[in-house]
Length: 140
Image 1 (cartoon, rainbow, N blue to C red):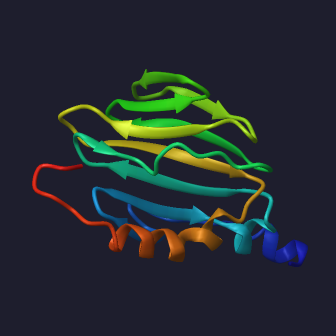
Image 2 (image 1 turned 60 degrees about the vertical axis):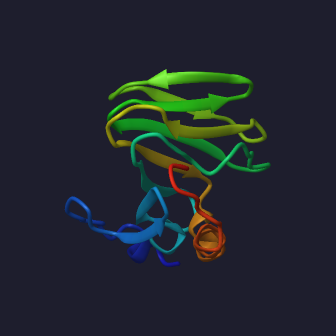
Image 3 (image 1 turned 90 degrees about the vertical axis):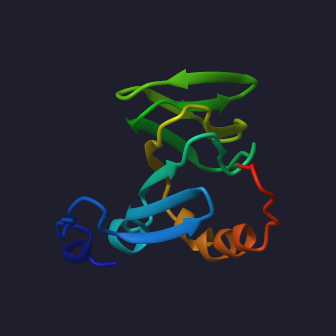
């Protein structure tokens, strides 16, 4: 990636970006390795009321930063769940187990910064995985 490509502004309005539907969860990628030279990825993640996120996981070489932008998101960092309201900032360092869930009656969302970038490479497989999960009435 040339410096001129990396320095080009990214301007997106509300809801714009590369959207992914994941059942009760959705993601919109705002910037990824193609725009940032793989230095970071930025995405929004939304969960409908009373729904789970991706499940506990960690990234060996990537930090995950979460900034709550809507509602109250419950975030697992290590072995502690934190109920985080709008404006809350949480970092899960590389190697630390993390997850998120919405335990409330209203939609919740986080802005996610993934350092270094490249998370979006996994989205096709993640979408396929969620599409193939069985759903039962009342589950989420």
